[in-house]
Image (cartoon, rainbow, N blue to C red; front, top):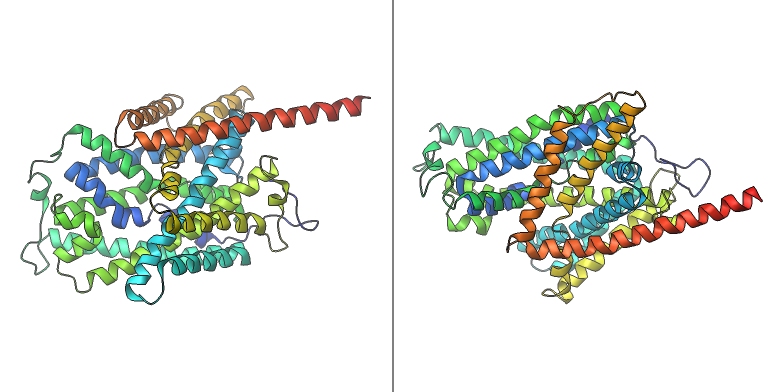
Length: 467
């Protein structure tokens, strides 16, 4: 990816080490949504929440395979936005790039506020707004220093999350097997007790899918980060191939054990989150403290990745003249500092809106991101189909192939359209669908205008040259 710079020769550098990219890829889908938010899916779908995670996991695996095919062919820190530009049109790359950036800059205040509330519970003398601002500024500082600094911080965050998941799985297996000295250790019988496996019906399972979809969003970050590694193609191939077992172990196994330990209709499940309630049932001392520290790590990791991802997407947009040119400048140490600061600043403003207008502006902003994950996945799938056909027309073969092409690609697109359609007709998700659709409409219009502007400039330049 080409970009202007503060001085000649300044560009993105391959500073991320293999172990850092590997850990980012392993833990990229482990966030607070798994540790806490999964309780909402269980409360809605009951034990059938396992099916919700399985279905969404399959979609993500297929999407990552398609994205991997394109990314291995041409690694780029703009990732799917760049591929949409080439496959669908400049307006599409513009639209999905800005929507993706918008999603992640709004993740910053959401996660910062969540982390600040955790810290505030132990340090009540510091107000939540100050703590959330401090967290954002600290992570902005680490992102500004160097890419290697981001990678190292994310490596340790990811390692903590992975260790926590593995520890929970080991503890859960011991509980279900009857090893722990706990009166009510649960077991597989809980899968069919209290109303059956799907106590709220098939419709609730579909609703659960929409909840779980956002837990997985972030797996695609590895294709952006790998572009700044020393061997992008190898890293992307490795991460794409391993996504299957990561989802199977981290999500499906942990959720299976959770619903075997905790009653799906336990009133404290939604109140405190899946993992804390499970530890409470197993009578683990200081369950809240343990989960709070893990969740704080998860939200901080998510913010770290969000700021990195948003800045790289803005850099890519700027390098393609889809964002202000000054955002394409890169410092001597290979960091797009202006893009980092601009993304963090928007996150800070959104965070302040939460404290100044908690019932108005902030909730509206959040609603506008509700369906972006599904739109990103849809664009990835459509781009893969079109680019694959273009490669075939040139007689080229991708190094990493999508399985059963084109049938499985079209099936994935159909599945995504079904989910988006359900979001639109479902009362529970209609607001998010309408808000996201409205924002997308505005961005598409801006993309079409920008594309026309660049075409006119190009034609005028050609006319000058020809004269």
